[in-house]
Length: 160
Image 1 (cartoon, rainbow, N blue to C red):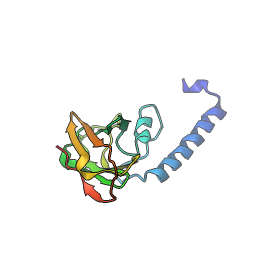
Image 2: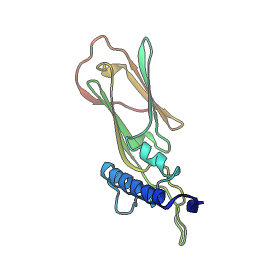
Image 3: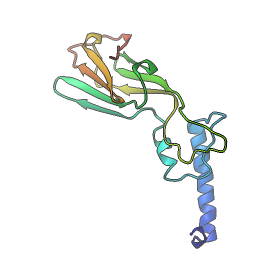
Image 4: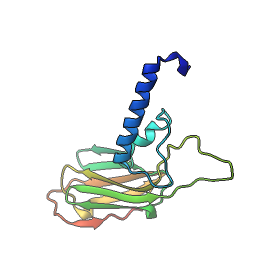
């Protein structure tokens, strides 16, 4: 099928791959045991789209701010949640879980591993006494009651 492409197109695609690879290496330096994929395909693109940390949904109601964070495979001891003024920060680490036997190889690797940090700018300062967080089925749910007036302090949020 690749023979159907004109030779100049193939050369252009090679240059695009090289430039994208160079850009992504600057964006996320690879660890020694990792390698930039030989080819960028539909199987490798999703990993690059989530480099910024775990996916987040934030919803505001009349009474509170509701934040949902996807944290598959993590326990509450694997990460921390902190507020400082109007900033929410979630930091943690997900260990690599792979079974390796001689001759085995990875065909697709879209799961994210390693250290992560995600910071969100919130619409208002937060009152420490009006925050709850729980982790159920790989989803971290954070509920923040809207404050009348917040104070600027840094503190850790307990996750149940």
